[in-house]
Image 1: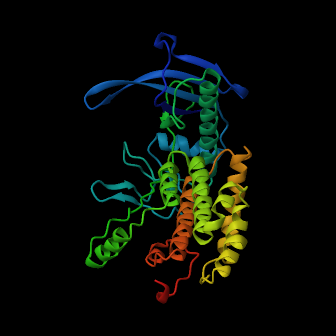
Image 2: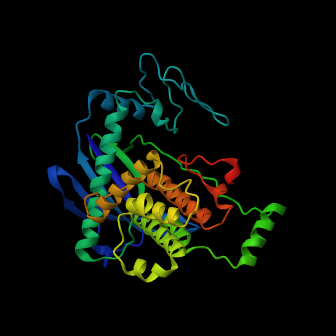
Image 3: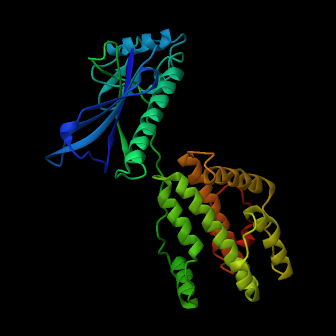
Length: 353
């Protein structure tokens, strides 16, 4: 059996399209292909550079039987049958019935596939996708060709018994939906905003950097992680300068201590020396351990030991790091800052808000 993964390559092009299609032989019989496809976009025909990876595989029997059954519009049933059957749609009725019959031209939810098939289906698609990404990066690097950090977009995954007739390969899809926080224009909110404007307070550069990290997160999570740490270190140093103005030149020029040391030792000692309340610094154990974990990941990325990070996990860390910046704002007298904390690590008394 053959499995094929196809990506389109945005922002990349070849010098002569007449050189395509172009084949490359990989290890273990794996093949890579560059080719041009035409798609309709807003009433016009658009030509896109695409790349395939094709590999011969020997699926376990349950996975092979699952694919062959899907080709015949049948779902193999477990014993007991899968939870979630029948699969229905409000507008189109039954998609998969209790006998496993699939409505023609409909896809089955991945979660409904047989338990014995899903691990292999996930694994083989992940492996081939990784190989295709590595090939595209090799090509771009060795020729210094144009293309963004992540120029590839999934076109599809397919399987075939003869390499000629291709069928859709079952795939998982996930959608991450977040609700952006709106601007509040209630009377109380306008009053707080007027106070900030009248005081001449400006958004700290650390918050600006953290917002930049948030924008990078979906496209380049590694860069987002590095910028988030830069924002944290900037915010802590600025807070130290606020509390010890005479030491600003020294703080600006001195090598920065490790981030955990800054938060757990340097900042709390400075707070104590100034006689300020220190309800949130040093960080409590669970928050400190979480930060240490991400310091390790940041170091691994920086030193080239870790090549990727999970975007959703980076998004959670950015929320945590932004909370620390708001804790610093509260320390600086911005008494509204604690209302914006989002992570689960903080216990805030109503009297503090």
